[in-house]
Amino acid sequence: MTEECETPCPSVALITVVDNSGVTRVKTVPVHRLPRVAEVGVGLSDVSAVMAVDDGITASPGYDTPSGDMRLIPDLDAAVDLHRSRLRWVPATMVDQELVPKPNCGRSILQRAVEAAAKAGITAEFAFESEFTVSDLETGEPIHRGPGYSPIALFAAEEFSIDLVEAFEAQGMNVEQFHPEYADGQFEVSIRHSDPVAAADAVVLLRLTVHRMARRHGLRVSFSPRPHREIVVGNGCHLHCSLWQDGTNLFGSETDGLGAAGGAAVAGILDHLLGIQAVLTPSVPSFERITPQHWAGAYTCWGIENREAAVRVIRGTVSGRPGAANIEIKTIDASANPYLTVAVILHAALDGIGRGLTPPEPISVDPHSLDEDARTARGIVRLPADLDEAIEAMDADGLVRTVFGDQQYGAFRAVRRYELETFGSLPREDQIEAHRWRY
Ligand code: GLU
Ligand code: MG
Image 1 (cartoon, rainbow, N blue to C red):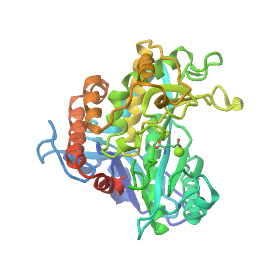
Image 2: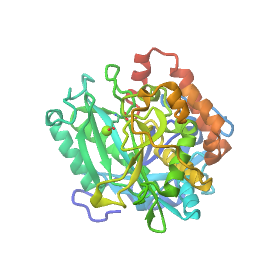
Image 3: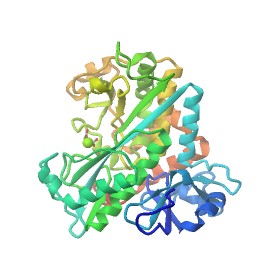
């Protein structure tokens, strides 16, 4: 925590958690109370575990009465003062009144995943790539109309872009790159990799920084996977991952690229991919994004630098190898809770390593261009077409239930079912609109 401030010291602390709907929730306290709040927590209702994207509250075993309390304990070591603001952001863990982590605390579930990896002698690094759509606050129209990746698109939001990058830098966020993306109004930020919890924290900080800066420029931002009915290319939230054992990058073998353990990790992720998709793409509009030929990875396959594969293996520039090698999981969007997402990916990889799985052959072509028989022969399967299929696949696979435990699994699943029942049969435009300003 910064004690000397350039501008007036922050007076208000934003304590954030991400719930089972993928929405970031906040409590604020005066900054001077933070040390005390780190000991006793600040309250949030227990049923927030079953709160959905529209703030509707459903029920599941353990979350079916209005009784019960949850305390948010801010992690003061992770606090960041927001740029040119009197706000200090602090991510929190969710505990009960005995200070035991709550079943629905994604940050604690992720911390346990990190411990499971450590037991297997593995450390992990993760980094999210965040795409989002910037619109005019008044009209809701996308702020640029391309060309994708062009200075013309950038200049449409020049001041916003500069302020944003300056804020990221001032907040110590290690921006790797920022650019106007392919779709109308779309931009992307990549943040440098870090340990799993820090990577998930960083994407929470990134989103609230982007929302805050947008407001200051008369703009409005959507991280929704399908932000606008006329824009077919969605917002992804790809996740990069490297795994390390005894100082060796498991994806950076000089001989075959992946190495045996790296290959097993990829095989584990592919083996569970259908079953974890309800965590990685949990909202009703998520599934409109996961379409072939949109770089969103619609099929369970991997390939070296293949942008249509769900898992893209990146060897890195020769000057950066073998450290730079990593895998990118494409089938994620920002309606996913980042803590739960990283936790299930890490567990799927560990499961592959534990079972000594061998990955299938890499795919270098667009899997959609293969005929059905060729895909079947290579074990390539289309990802769930909608949330209903994804929930079914999650039940059948079982990994998410094991990682979450029964109570959290019930709550997470109940939120998915509520959202499916509330939005699943609405006209497409209404589905998109209902989610547009929620993430
Ligand atoms: N917008 C694409 C997606 O929804 C990703 C494009 C890219 O690879 O940067 O995943
Ligand atoms: Mg992109």
